[in-house]
Image (spheres, rainbow, N blue to C red):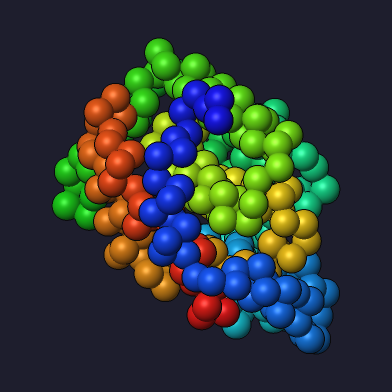
Length: 259
């Protein structure tokens, strides 16, 4: 395959590890009987757990009451999850392109960043710090961020135009998430955008049943593994070793048996 930044090297290992009868599992879970709008319910789950990964103080019980039972909470408590909810609604109505991702980032970062940084590719260095306030990761140099994000979206466009099977779909959806978060193209909201991007690719390839794939909840439930699998590749963007990313790529597909 003619890919610029994504890699096909681990697909055979991925196939060997991924659960059998993958699509049957998805079909069985399609449009489960829930008491509220199917899409809004799963957008709510995605929004809450993606927010919780970033340390937001929000729980699903409260957000459900806020969205579906019209119970009032302090605006500060729900606003960032509401923004992310709106971004998930956006991806169900718009094609996956770089321009639309920037629009989605503008939506999800409305209460996270000033307008001058919403949806804007950064032009400054970017570092990720750990809980000890030490540098955990050095993101793509500002001189190459635009080039790298364009490579990624060239690959996405290539894959969207081609028929790939369900295993390749999950493989590349997770790979897109990983590469995006390693580029770290925005000032903030990169993790939220990366998880949104994974769901978006699945939605483009699998249709509306992808909405019920609770990848965000799975990452939160397995948060230590999520961060450790991202860190395995290295701490400098230009020295990343993608041969070590199989455990990350398998996280979503392996969670399907737990749904």
